[in-house]
Image (cartoon, rainbow, N blue to C red; front, side):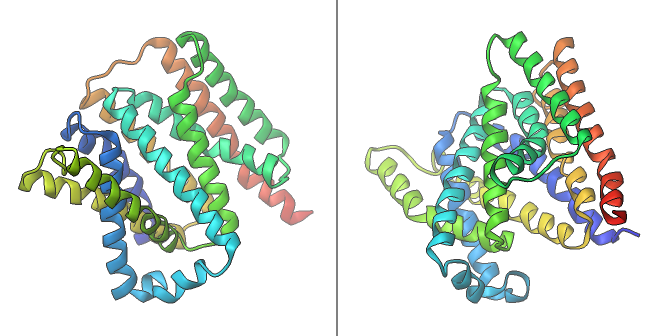
Length: 298
């Protein structure tokens, strides 16, 4: 029987992430880089408090020192820091340019892109049904490319950056909360320098200034850390297949927000694209239990 609290956390986390586009839209035409800077800055502050006052949740500063104990791990964090920053910038751009369905497509593709990275980088072997699922998803991407007259680069950039990020972090074996804390701390000097530069050029920072905008800037950390804590809590007690499936609440919410809040429309051919992507995901996840049982009985 599934843990009820873990299930609630695992659903709430991607649901909250799914509403982030509304927050970005409230900021209007704010510089995407400043949004990412505040997200890193205030996430670092919140996580510093968590690491300091809740060592039972995070492992404390001792876990941070252990995570930075070797040059291999330090290099890994430099890579993941760059990837997550790139991912955040592309996502903000997608929302501001009203390409929310492109972003949703990217996050639907991402899990199977990660599976492919496992084959290429980790030399993992796939069964027949996994290859079928991947081929169906590739067909969906090809249909998208044919209709837009080029590669859907926003979707592919989000899927690939988050996919590489996930694979590298998996190989590092670091607690997710400690990992994101280190990544945001690594961004802090650059964040402060960026804000100082904007201020020195006469640009009003904090999205134009004022108490409300300062609060909105700080809230960027809240919408990053709170879902992360919930996601981590859910993953600890749920089977990986269940938590992976629940992740799709995130891009699904993006689509609902795009349709209802942004009032975007989806042409018929794009529904066919998403239909292929969803079919590939159904094939993949519906066959995982069967393949696991075969491996155990072998």
